[in-house]
Length: 351
Image (tube, rainbow, N blue to C red; front, side):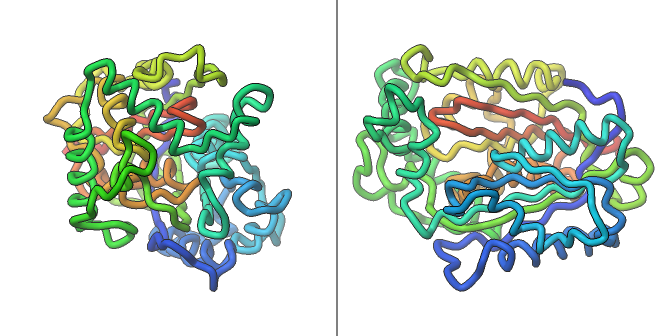
């Protein structure tokens, strides 16, 4: 969907992503990030027209866990607030549509997740088809391995190429102080063949937040806003058996509707938790070697579940803010084997 009202990401903040954060509650993990984005813009909580969050009750282990996080935002005086049981990228999409209506000129979007308390591989199994697939308990890594093997069998990649994806991502992450894994990370043993430990994302905790603003308000709050020129998301079949796991038509369609193919992008932040998924996304998004892929290190460097997709949008926006990118693409995914995909195109003002 194309923007009919100019809306931009004007601030982005995130935690230092860690393997465990046992000493912090979700609220304590979130509060410094919220203060960070507000400080960057000079806004107060009362200046925010709409607030939207993304998280998962399954990760938190309690129902309506997002209400607890509101302690970090401050719900008095009363605020206009919403929540999605999804990655924060989808919370950003809801905030974007809210700003399009003209009901608000600014929005705060945040997301958080603590994967360390339990087995996130098993938790994610609960999102599978409850009648045929979930009772078999295939975990998220096993399903990604099926996808990787399908790619290898189709001749579209091999284990050496997958290892190079991991090496490039974690080398790029050396410049990212927030990343959980940086530099030389061994590929390790097979976790689920053909995926080795190095082909898989780290398990960890983290949070992120962005502020959106419209038109002249965005220019007042940020020297070089990252304008959202297009954003769209699409969903594929829930059943893995009816999908071609070597392709991602939903990503391609979302990119087309967001206008990603109209002009080349120079930077792409892809939410690819597994090395094999980057191969699929690059093909679906028509990204060649001239495009900088995941300069932040991507989800292979830090993958806080429910925040990693929002982080991709934030990282792309930061490149625009700094003048390192004129036109960037950000991608987020949710569900098994790239089931749901969101694509946003961000641009800076002409220089």
